Amino acid sequence: MEKDGKERKKIREEEYDKLIGPKNRSEKGSAEPDVASPSRRLVTALGWTRRRSISMIRCIRLWTGEDNNSCFEEGVIDLPKGERSDILSGTVGVVSISFRETRAGGAFEWHDAPARQFVITLSGTLDFQTRTGEHFMLHPGDILLAEDTAGTGHSWKLVDDNPWRRAYVILGPAVEAPFVANSPSSSPS
Image 1 (cartoon, helix red, strand yellow):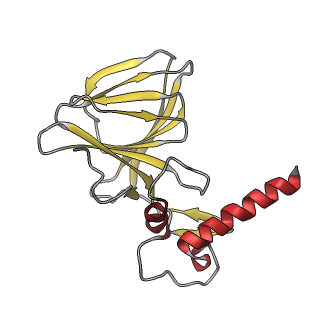
Image 2: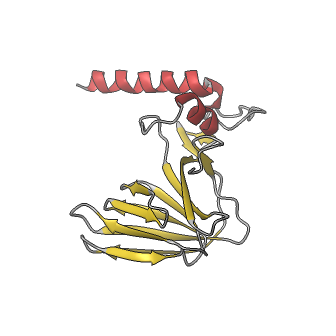
Image 3: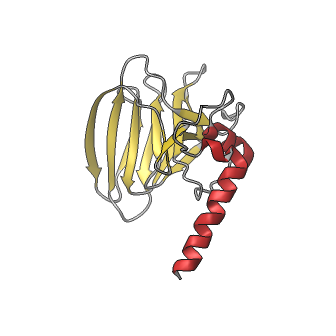
């Protein structure tokens, strides 16, 4: 059994190396390439699927569109650096972090995000909806980049039997979030 696990890990590493190149996998002293980040190249090469076996952190960006409605796009957290066989993002300036829990079956009607923030789902599965009727799901481990601080807002409801445990991470003013969209034209039509 242990051998199978090691073989699977080796295959994942080989897939990763084919997509972003072995030099970009946390070799000490290697120069950063003068091209798109490894995460962006990986998302492009995969054609973005829901596959998460290559260490990608799923992120949904929610913002207010020109029509004043909330819009969303799916992507990942940009992880261009690495050390000790890890891949990691750069540091992000934040104002605060808080935690919240909503019991199973909870829901919240139409509202805007109170501030530009990451919402990190620790437990619970949610169905989010925009006023235009579009839906997306959040699962444990997913991150919501909530930037719809004005407009018609969004709503959510828990759809499994677990409470929604989450961390709210308020982003600092003018901070660039490490979000990489699935593709340049991934905004809803």
